[in-house]
Image 1 (cartoon, helix red, strand yellow):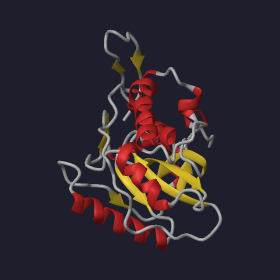
Image 2: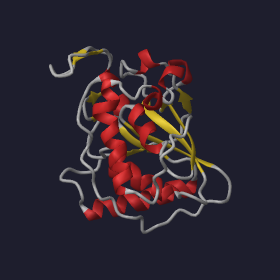
Image 3: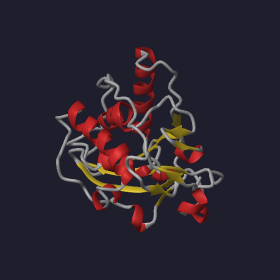
Length: 225
């Protein structure tokens, strides 16, 4: 949903879309290591994750060791409707998502899930993330292989049993209906716009939380999509 909001008086800045609202990062949760470890064949693999505004998801996963590319885009709808203005209306079935290309010899799929649930998104928010409201901001995972589906099912069961959140996990597991890259200006957004109000007050804390919580997976260089 596209709408205008004004930053707090101290910032004195206007913002103009659902992805452009200031907020505080989601609370960090000490997501545990997965009991069921991913066992994927050699060679680059892809993961598709949806966790609210794709700028922040991209910002976090672009700093993960073993990740070679992160592309912001739309998952869950048709190619013909995969445009920002259309998706932002909330009726196309898409979710803002990222497609992560990674080397499983360096970072496993279950470790990506650990980052996703621990710092990149809040799995208890239904059809929203923070200030961004609508089905296009739902929390969802789109397995790209039977192995990913198995590992995800195991990890979700593990997290639900651990009861780390006060509210129930509502993360959707969705079939792969295609991933469509977002417009060029959305790609590498945090890298290109480090002083943007949304990035500074929403995503910078999220990236800092990732660095603090997962030092073994952290890399300082932002991986371009």
